[in-house]
Image (cartoon, rainbow, N blue to C red; front, side, top):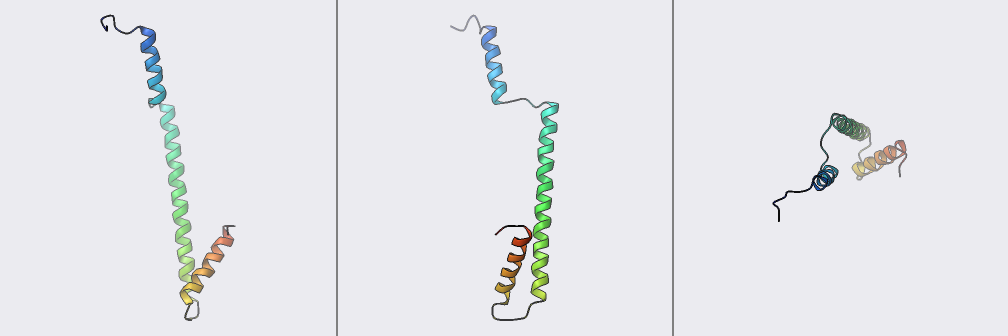
Length: 90
C-alpha cells in the first residue's frame, strides 16, 4: 500500500497546507511581531500612567475636601465626573 511512497505533488500540497496552518518565522514576520509587542507595551505604559494620574487626582481632591458623612463617595463621584469629562466619556 505504501511501498511506492507519496507522489511529489502530494508532498508539495501537504507542505503548502502545513505552512498555511503553521507558518514559519521569517525575519519580516519577526520584525512585525516585535512591532506589535512594542505597541502593546507602549499602550500598557500609557494606561498605567493614566491610572496613576487618576489616583493622584483622587488623593488631591480627597485631601482638599470638607469632612462630611459622605465625603469619600462625594469625592469619588466628583473625580469620576472630572475624569469622564477629560476623556470625553460618560
